[in-house]
Amino acid sequence: MLKVTPAHDKADFEIGQRHKLAVIEVITANGHMNELAGADLNGLDRFKARKVAVEKATELGSLEKEDRTRTTSVSANAPTCRLNRV
Image (cartoon, rainbow, N blue to C red; front, side):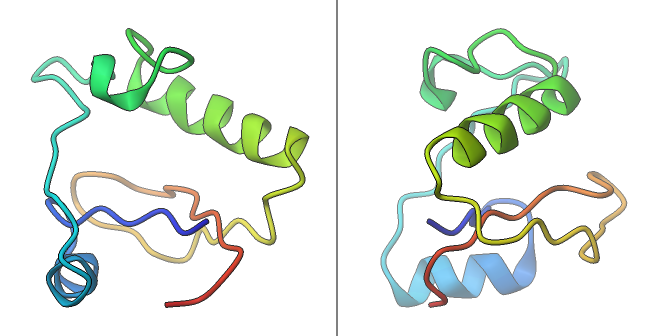
């Protein structure tokens, strides 16, 4: 599993284009996750949702590493969950 945010980050946008990924918005204007984020994250503040997503990936044994080196002006310290590199 690789968290890719094509609508948010230039490098991720390029990955999304290369792999023909849909660009979907999962964060509302007020910073909460919407129904497209899934039942476990729907309605959560984006910062809480990141923590829950990491916890879920860890529980599933799917979290290889959490990369906090990528930051942007919109979203600092967003965890990246990786199993296979693209």
